[in-house]
Amino acid sequence: MTSMSPAGWSIALVTALVLSTGVANAQLPPGFDDGNDTWPTAVPAAACRPTDRVETGLQGEVTLQDRDDRRSTAGYNCNIDLLGQYQGDGAGFTSASYRNCVYVGSTFPHTNGVAVIDVSDPTHPQLTDTLSEPAMLSGTWESLKVNDKRGLLAGTGVPLVFGLGYISIYDVATDCAHPRLLNEGRGSLPGVRIPMITHEGAWSPDGNTYWASGQAWTSAIDVTDPTDPNVIWSAPAGLGEHGMAFTPDGDTMYMSTLAGMNILDTSAVQDRAAPGMTMHQLLPLRGYKHWHDGAISQHSIYVTYHGVPYVFNADEAGSGGVKLFDVSDPSQAHLRSTIKLAINLPEHMDRWAASASSSGFFGYESHYCSVDRTEDPKALACGWAQSGVRVFSVEDPDNIHEIAYFNPPAQTGKNDQLSNSQHVRFGGIAVPPISGTIAIAQSILNGQINGDNITRDGRIIGLDLSADWCMSPPEFRGNLLYVTCSDNGFMALRIDPSVYRP
Image (tube, rainbow, N blue to C red; front, side):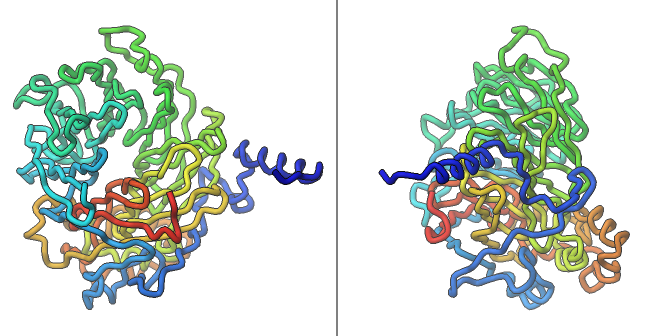
């Protein structure tokens, strides 16, 4: 082993302390107010391979020209290759995976249910089953989730924004390609509902609790016995509660809200403090963080850097991007950095609006992300709506940069062939996309754009599918990503090992 001088040891110790405390906030712009200011910069763009089919506009943009001349129907890639695909009839907002199997989210009024895909051979994904209980037929929205520890899949029925009472729980550990329904009565039988409002869902780490959030109400469902789910706690958990993450012990929840994050003590539910009784509060309320840069906080991811707890939080509207918070003091979440693409910056919101018009409610927004590992993560992959799938190096929280992207071929003109696509069913007549309304207004008021050019050729209605919606979390399998996008369905992608090694 090489020796080190006392000075060298001192430098190493100081470096380790700075990295481990997580309070340096080296990336924050001078004087930046993380509650009121807009993050002003994009992460450095990926350096692509010479043979890649790269974006022609701003980082993350599908340009008007590419849409009009249909270049976008060939897609874009940078350091990522498509290995195999099962398009089917499209995908809902979120899908889930377990081992070599993928469960494709369903969209109401699509009637087939949740498709089960075997990806044992990533170059030839195969449909092996279809889940057709009421919850699966009603549309799973953002509720379809897997608990790896217990090998359980659950989803709730959400026809449009909210759902009432249907949940199905499956054993996927025995044979992931053919899930077995466990709750054959309560929650799964037609007309036999449980008392909850649903929109989004998440598992406690131990797999004994499934949390259903309904924007205005959250319920904790005891699934210790997955054949007989029961609501054991139910109440509001924040304004516009959405997705959530937990500490590994399940005692702390990071709840995404309308424009912020609640940090809640969930130990009473986790420990079943009053077995058989509904608990009416989570005590104590440990912290609340809000911001104006972005809107409709989508979900959180709990990670640690050198043992210090952090949370990634994605905004699904307002071009807020993905924020990284130091949560070592749960009463004061400190912003460490923000991940944005160039198309998300205030001075580009006119291009954001014009180019994304005629392709639905969502423009170029982060939605769902995942990390390759929760302890000292190296990579973060996100579904970034019309910007496709984006992959970032997050090994150094003060030097986050993009390393790869894949924006799948636009399915222009194929609206009638994609009955399960959330993009087709929910995209509708939002021109420019409603998800950017606040950010566009702020840019106009601040003089960063003039607002004259925020629609595509003056269009005010229509849905041409000139860019897909990639909304579901890309899930890591070594160098592979399991991805579903609304129009392209399931895709197995390979990240070039020159930019990422698991």
